[in-house]
Length: 175
Image: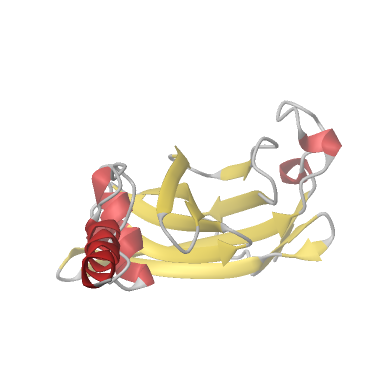
């Protein structure tokens, strides 16, 4: 009986100590969510200092970065075990992004404008969320960037992103 209990105990210890193969994007669960995001972004050449914002929608994290004055967005898939890199888009001015292959991935529409008179944006008649960040270029010169984001549920008509019915084609700039 003693050997049987010792065998079960040893088996439990070995099972508890096994380390499943780690993927490139698998993150350390002891890190905070923000640290996990920074780690994945850094692995894809977006250092933490370039991150200006992130939004969580369903099982996805949209990470907005600024590199060389350009607004970019990366899409990450989030689960309790890991954060996986899906895709990124660079130099955004006006864009709707999504992928019907991923269940529950909404369509994100991003509008960036240099026009200081623009106070709001509507996408498909709904107000978009306004965001802004400042980037210090020199000690006495800062660039303020305004952009708006709007999430739309993926519809069959959006599956072909060359379609004219995309949310990006239904934008109203408000002065």
